[in-house]
Length: 140
Ligand SMILES: [Zn+2]
Image (tube, rainbow, N blue to C red; front, side):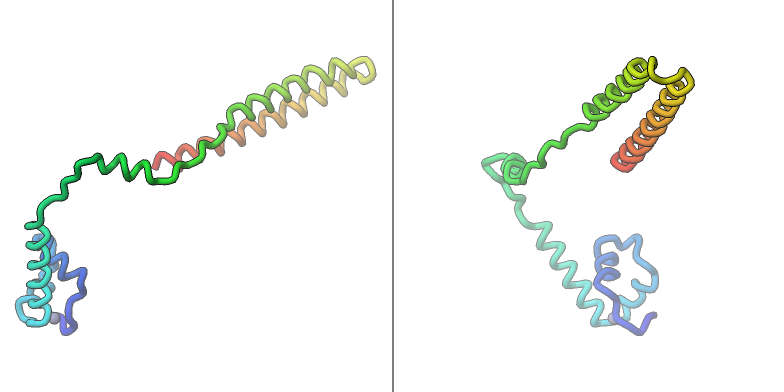
């Protein structure tokens, strides 16, 4: 038997879930009048709550509560921005080498195209990684 009195959590566990109460708690309650009195108070409280009538409303409570809650502003979905940026990148890839092809060499155009494709692949991969991370976070 412990020499200190039980915490409210232990007493509540003893009263409301006696099957899972620690055997030390049960022994303490049996031998300590202070904790036994608290157990009796919790039992009286539980009986009083169980004996109360359930509230009946003549309106739909969930609707009233949901209507009173502030609404979240709809966030702009990033798909439009991503598609726009992708189209801009593709246009850049196609337009710049064609426009300056006559002024530059084929190697310079290939370097510009390769660099642009690598950057686009890196950025899209990074965006996809962040997207998957956010979806995983939200689905937990
Ligand atoms: Zn006690």
